[in-house]
Length: 182
Image 1 (tube, rainbow, N blue to C red):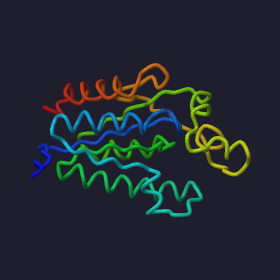
Image 2: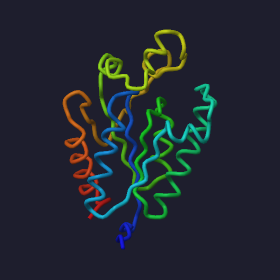
Image 3: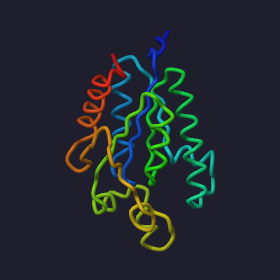
Image 4: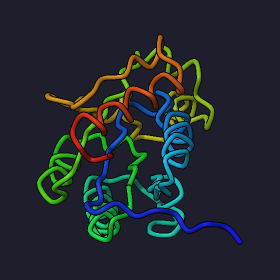
């Protein structure tokens, strides 16, 4: 019989932010594995997966993004309040979306995956930038829509030089330092 995942007394949330294709999802997967080794089952709120449910035909307008990130934050806050570690895996191109999470979740960290636009465009696993360049998408962060990098992130990961395992280890070390993890 599998053992139940351990809950922590105070849930926490961290937001992996950066341009599309900067490495957020790969880091999130590595981080989930690191937390699992510590007996914790983290909930990953990945924007593409949530969009399929919340906005199946997204237009990516400012109004739609505001509503989407408000719901995403609400879900993450509820999970964290119940002792579940939460990983937001979402670009959240406006600083205000991430600042709202910091204001509403007591144990919160913002992790900036800093990767040059050119590198993200070369990776482009979902074809987001290609669609933007071809005029098939009109709101790609970093191309047509602004991406507001964090002013004071809790941690910066160099998305071009640091691999996902190294990034996950740095994040776990920060979680321990901040006493979010024992």
